[in-house]
Structure formats: C-alpha cells, structure tokens
Image 1 (cartoon, rainbow, N blue to C red):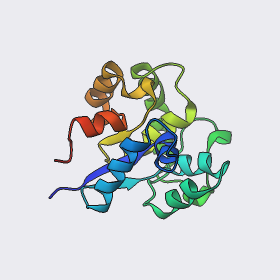
Image 2 (tube, one colour):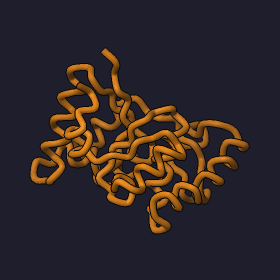
Image 3 (cartoon, helix red, strand yellow):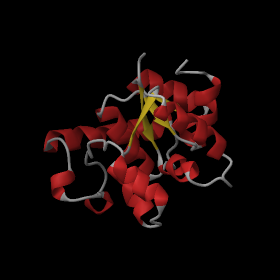
Image 4 (cartoon, helix red, strand yellow):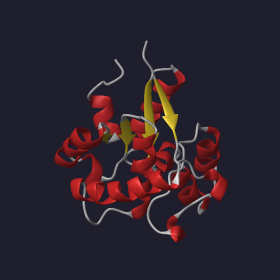
Amino acid sequence: MRTVKISLDTNCMISLFSPEEEMYPYMYCIDQMRWMGKVRFYISLKVIAELSDQGGIALDFAMSLPKLPSYPVCNFDDQVGTFDDAAGTWDDAENNEKLRPKIRYNVSRKSDVRDVQIFIDTYQSDINIFLTNDGKFHRSEPSERLMKEFGIEAISPKDFLSRNICA
C-alpha cells in the first residue's frame, strides 16, 4: 500500500476541527484515511503561523504533524519562524522568488502571499497533493496548470475523496 503525502492549507486544518464547517465531513474522512495509513499529512510553518493567531486544537494538531521545510520567499517581513527555521540557500530563495509570479500567473494574481508560500514549501518538499479549499488553486483550470508546471495537484477535500485517490 502506497501512502499519499498531502500538504494541508490553513482552511483545511481549521475545518478538521470545526464540525459546523462545510468541509468538515470531507476532512474527517480524509483524517480517517490518515489513521488507516493511506495518507500522511504535512504542514507548512506558514500554516502554523496563521493558526497561532487563533490557538486551539487545530494549532495543537498542526504542531504534531511533520513540518515541511520552510523556504524563504516574498519580503523579509512575510517570513515566519526563526532564521534557523529557514531551509535552503540564498540561491534557493532567489529561485523561489522566480517561482512566485509563475504560481500567481497559473492561479490568480490576487493569490494571498501566505498561500503562495505554502505552495512553494509543498513544491520544494516533493509532495504531490496540496489540499486546499481555495478555489483560486483547486478549480479545474488552475489545478491543471499547476500540475503541468509544478507536478502538484491542488485539490479540494471533496474532490480528493470523490476521485478516490487512495483506493
């Protein structure tokens, strides 16, 4: 049995612990797949930074997951964690900065800086599934372009389950 590695965005993490959220039943099922060993969750320090504003069980769970290397991209003020948390070299940071407009072109120029950073961490970690409920990423056309350009499938929890990726 092959375990599918999944990078989670912030909204997916929050939905996992919010039964009132529309995404909750899908995230609950995907979490059950994690318990069965079919999928493995990974988390970006950028997601942890966003969750730390709210605290709570979603943050506690995120802190328990394997962390993606945190690659610098965007402005210095947009970085999270400490200098020691940063992965890669200055050349990697320069290359990541070149990826940013490509991602925004494939998704939306209005993409949130944090979402782009999480996507870059996912890309640099050789993870092929980016689980997100952000339509700018998972709608069919952007998702197809991201797959073609970066080899990462940006997919909503609902679509992930309906495609039965782990069956």
